[in-house]
Image 1 (cartoon, rainbow over the protein chains, first blue to last red):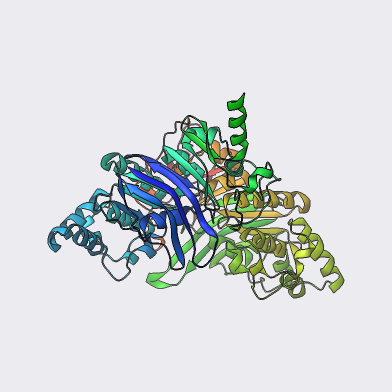
Image 2: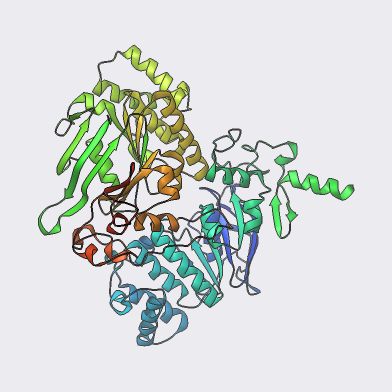
Length: 314
Length: 318
């Protein structure tokens, strides 16, 4: 359904790239986790896909396809419709317009994108609010965002994102700002809605436990580079990339003390994790290829590239 | 004897019809050298309670005793402030970006103690080493440091006056998972070396599980369950604790949990119902809960629960 190939973006007038050859696919009805720490590029990847990169950041290369349609035109501008792709943001209160009643915000999205009359759009907005489990949808539609709780606002965001039945839904840390009991409610809601609408979901999070809970597949990013991708069970129980292992250790154990506490170095032309990786060697100053390490499980690491080439020659 | 004891502490913001009772009668004791985790969701009063303990906000009523003597109204005294310190959630906001690390670290000693400049320099070097930065960081400014390093400086600042208690208010919540893991290991090592007691406030239950000796669960300004960490995480008794724990996503892909999903949301603290404040979301609610409020009672030694449904279990007789 969604296919992202070699997506590369960078800072204008600078050779540095924030995303390097990022590729992943998501099938209809599938939830694909995009995980990483601050600076990993997970949010940049989603903004690039949506065609809403912040000023000063430019699209350099790559393609985004939904259902076979290429979204990127010759000038590197992404055009998509609300029926193709919609996004849920981390801070629902800041993503909603504080001066407009939430029902009207949703109905505008429906009216503008689907060309239906205002009263029909308003009616559908209230229906959507009820559909995402908001009690008293009629009344809530007349409320302003500041009158609603964070969990309620996130339901409004979900209603808005799904109002045009998008084929792809991008959820960027959709529950990070919420309490865990509310997060559990939103997770249940998202799972139900995905099963019902068969949307392809890119589920961006820093929380590996949320991935274990929600995602069919997972893509691990670091420094704008895809480190490892595969089936959730395979990646979480049998991680092949040193960075994934380090990240998993951090959840339940103490981290490997050999991995230095350093920020991402975007100037590295080789593997972006090389300056922290305890297994780094000469080859890591080149960009590592993505190699198969299991059934539909790939890692971008020379450790495995070598294994593979030696096993091929043997 | 406990190092720090809270007896029926209340904190109300505002007054009259708009009054918000943030903390509603909390009894807690912090023992010397232990880590007491204080968990709960937004608005439960955990941060307010921490601020009251440090003296950043006065309690509305109730008593706090430190080493057996009440300390209310005495937060102006340097000795108390020296012995109870705090680390805040956002290091970038709690450190002064214009000051060098050495100046920031020396400040609590200059304000709260009479130690000599030589002693300050000695402590500075040993504390910076203890938090894993090293004396070479003394001349840096916080804006030059990463989030993890800034939090290490904030911890160092709290340690400078050699306190007995540090209130840690979400000390790792703004940090990435791998940095968080290192800060937790650091806090543990500091406790082993210095014997300082932590009041560890967090909404992140897995962090608390890895850190705390005992855990107090707060809901709407009250402690609803208190026990040692293992008991809280393995056999929670209060329906809210059960729901809270079951809502936390788990890394275990094969675990089949019976999830308690709570209906609705936490009510506003200014419009609390009569009786138990958890009644509208509680799966075990019965008539009595709507008439009177339960109190925190021991169900076994060291395990206190505030719930009629748990109290009336036949296993507990008194």
